[in-house]
Amino acid sequence: MALSLNPYINLRGTAREALEFYQAVLGGSLDITEFSAFPDMGIPDEDQHLVMHGQLETDDGFTLMVSDVPSTMPYEPPAGFSVSISGEDATKLEGFWNGLSEGGTVVMPYEAPPWGGRFGMLRDTFGVDWMVSLNAR
Image (cartoon, rainbow, N blue to C red):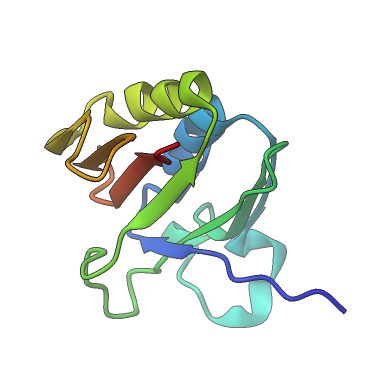
């Protein structure tokens, strides 16, 4: 049986927008379940439209999960981790970089680092940190 390790990002009220953004950048198929699908969970009426679980599966084999934290639960913005994408497809990685950085903040430009290849760090428009790395050959 295969195992997988997937990022699961919690946001406050922007999970659907984030998932649609990530799908536009990374491609793939998106599955979204709202809290309204499970009315007995005790989630306030004003939060029923929020994403209880969203999952993006891409043709590149990425799985990215995102959900909203309801207003009745404590929430801290994502911090202390980065989602990292790396590989050898220069065109695809540059496209990911360009898409993810749209509306975000570039922390380290996507350029040649001392160890070769290309590398960059950014914080996207949803406050999620990303690293993109083109492996040195």
